[in-house]
Image (cartoon, rainbow over the protein chains, first blue to last red):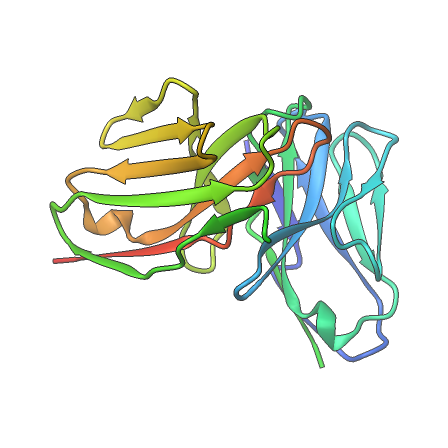
Length: 113
Length: 110
């Protein structure tokens, strides 16, 4: 099992460009999450999907959209990247219940110039 | 006030030492508690859940004090491989979000 995989690992964008971060899990988990991690800020939840077909906003959703493509895949889209979106993005998944352990992907390091 | 607060450290300790980290949380209705470990430029990984009665996993002991709203992690006989950032994580009583502390940095030296 690969667990949670993310692509790309690194990305540099110019202000105003768009891109989609991909995430997939092979653990048959129901719930998936997108976080961002900034120096001195800790991890903050952007969006989550409690189950296939549902998505909800987290703490910092502005500037992002998500798609739960199927049970395995959960993508994060930046429509018009801004320098403030320079961060490390982690995708995570859990079985489904809110108290379950979350398993994280290796992260995408995004720089917006 | 941030929901989960930790001393960022760094804690520099020699091999074999015992070190303890504390974490405080603001939401008294929080439901679940965890310690995650994050190595430099890597993803967070669950170290252990924290139960009301306290729990131990090898050299690691976690304690929860609901009355004072703090969680602790004790590491005995520190190893070089314990060097990492330790994240205190609290799950509120509703919703799916986890609240992460900013982490405590530990460096174990020879």
